[in-house]
Length: 294
Image (tube, rainbow, N blue to C red):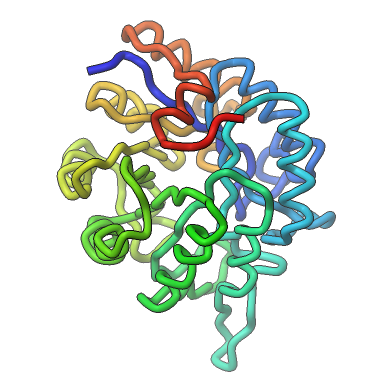
């Protein structure tokens, strides 16, 4: 087993605001600044969310392109646009029952933002983090539309999953239909159960089980939410997985101590070094994922 691992920085996300952590980058110049610094510290992939000028969530392609062009001007990190979006701003559609629905048509715009990869959030969950129910509806027909849009544009999916059924149902079904080429890159998100009905908590047993559910020829990454970030990423390294850190998933360096994106990347790389692992470069990661070199 190789001792080299891909490290992803998730700098922003689609839910938190600067009121939760003043270091959260939300505007293109702020996001690019953080991503470039994290690339120099060892990150190979950037998981990007876009925000409007008022910091509300969006999948506006022009804003994504602005972010990605600024990043590319400063480093060669792999860019990965979210097609999940978030739970504010352009992502919300009010329903007659007083709830909100995640805007699927807005999600599709993330594929026009100039990234090499896009997150495939083929999940149907209820997002409760904003204090109201946001129905994220991605039935099988939408899953197929979303991944076909990526493949038609030459974008490699990052298959994002929150529970075993997400792997065993739509991800496996779509891979078997030929919507991706191996290796299949699957991001396992654990620890988000308090904010998403349909998500799983982190535990060693749950992560072990979800890895066993992966389709053949998969490689995988762990995203641990909140206090799960540190133990989940450490377990993943020992299991042969790749890791993601950043303020999208976790605002704290330690109890009561707010973090920055750079601090979280530097800690991750330091832990890897202590355990005998090294971060892969963006070029190595492109080779592993089957992406074109710049």
